[in-house]
Length: 615
Picture 1 (cartoon, helix red, strand yellow):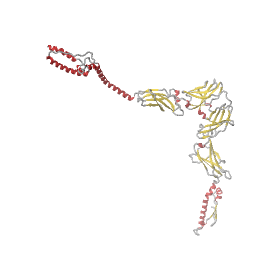
Picture 2 (tube, helix red, strand yellow):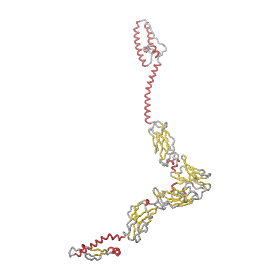
Picture 3 (cartoon, rainbow, N blue to C red):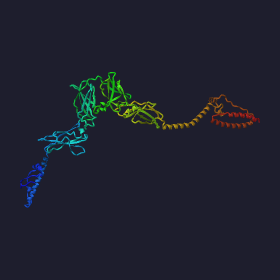
Picture 4 (cartoon, rainbow, N blue to C red):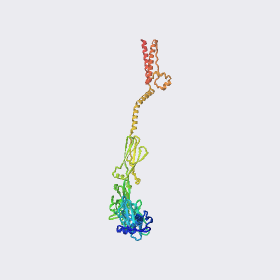
């Protein structure tokens, strides 16, 4: 501490003696303070003894207080931050793999202001220096060399610097580079034909860039083309990266530009304008109107050509090769059965195309002269292929039901056709003797029709349908398959009950028939002479003649009794005979048979009577 002097009301100068020459040079001129010793501070309140010492302590305390109070407005000035402003309007621009940081900064008097930026990534709280953005003199910097995960958010900050002075940081909101990136213009290469232009588009960004590394095959491209004239009409087309523009005029200059799109919302910038002139018209025109027709389950490739006696060949290519950068001319394959054909059609083998989208082209040739390839025909194997009807197997079950099994076609070449689709089946079911049909949709290939009539014939037929409505395909119906249901447990019960009832009814029916026959025989076929007891009830001749048809009239026998002594014996005999008649009459009523025993007995008695009399 330097010298301190002065009395009441005097100004005191306090100087800081730094320990180093650098500190003294930097801070001594600014720390030197001039202050006035306040009267109340230097007043001696203790009396003469020791008052001078207390006065010195009071002066030192006041000086220290002034130094502390002055520190807040002198130290920031020493840091150099009060005279520099933070950068404004800081923005991040990303086009493809080019990262640029831009801002606006005020240039204070004297110039020599530079800017520096830092960055911070997730899971790391440390701020790191941003490559390419340290002590730059312009209001922008390129930090494309920084290897970032383009899908993770990153934070940036930037400040101004001048010598030892720095401005406060300006912080940029966290952002994901992929979300902020814009699509740049693609690169285009053209090749002319007589009536077409081949176009080869390279995706935006660097070849080894990371921004669109996962989306290079997802770009779609929009092309604007026009004739190179003042009044030309601009036509817009959506094209593949490897495509061809058809229906152009020979020896004509066309100009075009292309932009890329990445769905759903990223649209890129247009490429520069490219112009090219088509060539002289070829001697042989290419085949036209290339198409594929399906006949039953066979696909036929057809095309139109005006000249005759020509030779044709066809080639195919997977459509996804059109989206892959590079030359795909060597990836075209010869169509089986369509090489050097003399007709304007050929049959495509069924197993040539599996699930997917293909491109087909045809070329005409006449000796050593060949045409250019025809316009490429897009071919969707799933949409163009034909479903074949399924096979059906029906088996009856014991519970009066029919179990239905649906299988793939037996032909091996047809199996691969239906296997490319998720199928459901439409089944039509009906009783063979009825026209009423029952329709149902089944995804299962094994199901049952329950609760049917026993011992009844039912028929089934089915067809295959694509489950996805996008394809909207169906096969024809299969041939009907008919099967008879089994009797079932209820039918067997009734059958057994019927057999038992029939067995029990046989004796009853036999007995009833026997009685009926006896009655018929009694009424219509009586004996020649009815018992005498019946005559008592048929005393009237008309009634007897009505009921009994007799061929001879019955007469009674009369006997002359001369000896009265024998009357008693005869009466007893007659009484016994009457009792016997009554018994026979009762018996005759039960059996229905009549006899003439009475008459014969009477005759015998008459014959015996003279003999007894003679004795």
